Image (cartoon, rainbow, N blue to C red):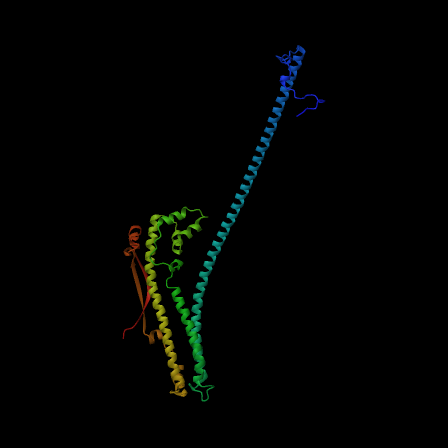
Length: 374
């Protein structure tokens, strides 16, 4: 490319200068110049040190602020943790207090229920007396309605036919009798034995196979883990009964043997309950038969109303029979049952080892009812 001749040549290189024009060594400074130069160097060094110190100071300040911030966060965290623990402790204390209150209330209600049951027994006794009196009043009302109490003979003009009265009054008496039987047998079954009835008897069958290690581990649990432990091992009413003693291993084995003995006793009571229920059923069936007997006697009118009323008129003034002795001929004889608990197959070994020999035998006294042999 052609260059413009009016412009100077700008392509200057080191080779364009003569070698002899380049300095062969740095220029020499005078003493004043060297002194000034040294002062400038020292000033630059001081400025550099000051800048470094300033940077270090700022770094330390930042580190201090960071450290202070961390400490503040740690302090706030400790305060929050302390407050959380305090709230948790207060909550647990309130729950434990509530549990104690509920346990006390439960104990009070159990005692109240026991008192109610005792009152109910007395109420049933009064109810039985009232039932007996109502039966007597009903019979007396029938007699006075159809029998002249002054002459002891049937009224010439009775207000209604006796058979019609029988249709209404007899079912009412049967209802009273049914309620009476229910109350009597409930009272007997609820009081088969004088001691406290424990709820674990419902599942007691003599096969309590819980291992002692489970009972031991139960007492090692914190109270907060006990519900989970019970659920895991499926604790039942018998387990609750056993842990209420807080037994050691020997005591646990003793309780297991006691439970076996109780299971045998329960089996005997079970037979008694079965017999009682059979007796109640037999009484109800026999009562139905006697009702049918009365229906045939009265409603068929094979025996006239006058004949029937003359018959019951004689009973009106007769002394009422005592069915216990005069009809069924039941004898009451005092009896004493003697038990040698040292011979029991389940707990005899404990009796022989831990009890005085004088305490090996016990007695219970009752009245034995039996029907006289013909």
